Figure 1: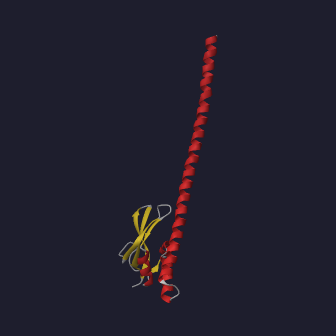
Figure 2: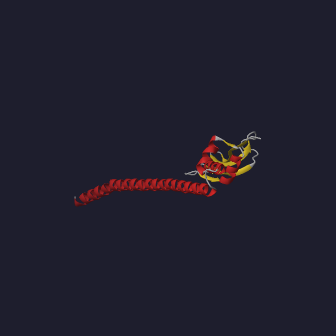
Figure 3: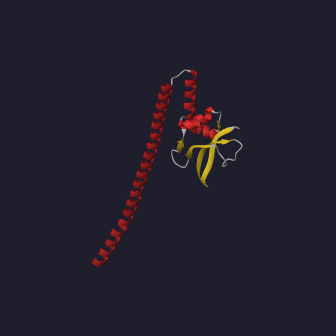
Length: 164
């Protein structure tokens, strides 16, 4: 039975939400699956990915082939790196502790990159809001300035009519 690690679509039209599953390659896209490995929500920025890394590595070691998108997600979350390190441990190139230390260091670095992106997005959003507020203040001041001389001219005309 050829097994694939692939995405199973859920959610409503225009708002996709995916489960990451290990399924028989002959099963329908949204049909029967062997095990749910995680979830992927592309609607958020950055995308939200929950993945059972150990379960994914188990399926990869048993010969499951990920689809292109699933491979990108597994790589992003470190499942392919963990499989690679497990192969090094099996061959004797690394000890289990060294492999775990390398994987944890990679996870920390990746978490820092994701946090930096999230911080950058919030900063850009805050800058855009501040810029929009300044533009709105400028428009309001221009509108007030345009209306203020009209009031003064009317007052001057009424004063000159009273003097006559």
